[in-house]
Length: 539
Image (cartoon, rainbow, N blue to C red):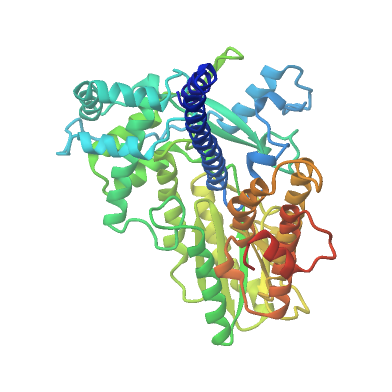
């Protein structure tokens, strides 16, 4: 509209023959054109900033987001792989089906429980405010499920006929039914960076669900979460998928535990355990049983029971679908909370000893054990690891000892303790990466800064593709990328790892200097202080 208006103003002054009126109209046109150009620049910059903010929100501590990661791909880029019999899978559709059935395997589970009574206890119906709050939390541009309806379309349906929408969801609640058409999911296969893509476990499966089902899913998740939090049903050392809890809290807990043990003249061993395909291996019967044990309201159990049954994976492009009966979906709001109930059993069982502490962030298990000498860890770790083994066996989960690591927090380790899990050695590492922070056995944080340096150099090399000294994007654009992406990557978790020492300050300045050089387009000989002044960015 503004563009058309400026074109009309230009034509008007050009068509004017009277000199004074022509000058007046020309001045007015130039003034309005300047405003229009300024508005365009501000809108472009605001849109660019929003884009960068969304990129960072996706995953604060993973490597490089979709803005510049040319390795990002979808299922269109599946590579050749072998099936369980060692035979080569020849077509794209069969490869995709093989990967999906690996992530969503059908199992024989005869213990699936049903609600013991058809009588439904008293419960509150869904209200307009409750549904409206769900829509406020949802973004319109999310990918739709098999039905093709986006969140924006569903919102319009709600605002056009609120009573119809609310009555439909309340009818589902009253009957204890989660409609089957809302339980059909498309799956996006996201390859894990740096992994062998010939193996099906190196793809992350994200389920794209129908939006109507997502709304009902979110309401049930909020009600279940509220019940569990209000009645203290979840352990305090579970930090994943919970309100007002972030990755910094478990990291603070780890550092505080190590420091406290050191003040008590005790050493700390930290064991990181890897659960193979954790979310897709949970049995539904275990979830229902735990819901009964935790005395969750009966109407919620009945809804969750129906929510978990008769679920299908659909691939319309390759013309196949199949039913599965195990696992919680990555893409659902309710399913992660259900996984927390499984994990809570382990936390309750292990956090009973003063010298043993288990911290979990979703499915990441971290065990901290205190003892007086290094050689004692070979014995003191047996009981906690045996309990983990029993927990995994009871819930048919698999702990991969080959991907599990341990370290001992001591200045100089002369002899490594032998730590066994299910008759296999857990490998020793001088550093463990946990929630995006590299924790070394000395707590010097130098390995973490070296990790950030490598990450920063990779990012700068990618930026060089469209940013050179004499050509490329303008410095203001590169500066925005630095402020909204690069700086947040580099300073993630700084309240955990930063120490006011000369070596850490020097390394941080070196990281910043490399990034600011792309903004100022200066030589390497220019001092760090000068680059900071030229870029207008503080140290």
